[in-house]
Length: 284
Image 1 (cartoon, one colour):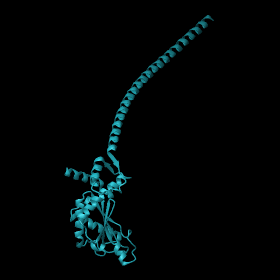
Image 2 (tube, rainbow, N blue to C red):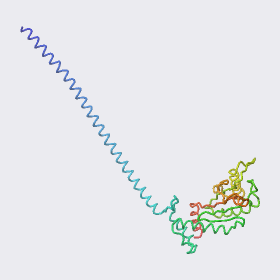
Image 3 (cartoon, rainbow, N blue to C red):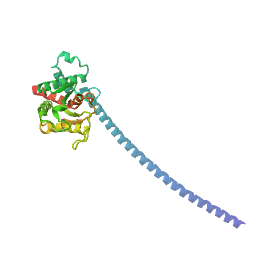
Image 4 (tube, helix red, strand yellow):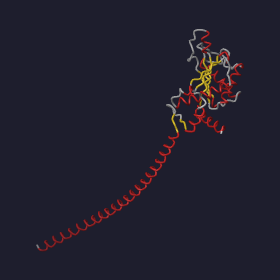
């Protein structure tokens, strides 16, 4: 009995020791895991602090740039004015040059200028009137100036034979005088707009009225470029066919009125004010 008891006690002690050894191993492993985790956490914390420091520097640089941009924008806005509802911008120098031109007008003419855009229209109209009066375009045409646009309407009989898009040589003096106006006013672009009556056309060289109106405007554009040396970047050919008549097409006389070519002289505001500035420099 004593022998069995001793064996049992020995087995129990061995089991307890063995169990204790396994627990110590697990504890040591867990302790090592904890140490590793703390190390990773510390490393991550350092990296996070470094990133935060870099981000703070970037934010500071962005704030500096934004401050500079806002300052430049405020300074620029103080020197610029927007004209009407469009995006045309007028600098202080441009406005000064425009005022010099406006000073040549009578008080009655200036009375109608209520806004900055009205003043620009007056300045451009003054320049256009001056150019056209110095280069009279002839009697068989009509000239209308509406604010900043000059509309010169030329009868079909002066420019083309019926159904043709070959320009009559008798129209050359007119085109030469038009070229003189354009050469004298480098700030002006020109649109050549062809119109026909409502009678249909279909020939070997012309498909329909659209085709005829476009070919007529293009023929004039080519003459202005090739014969009279007008800068092609200032020329705009356009065909309107029979869809913008002056009157109905019920009579021969009315159809003759509707067959026409409109020469539309339009200002390029950037060029216009640049030329005004050049004129003042020359005077000085």
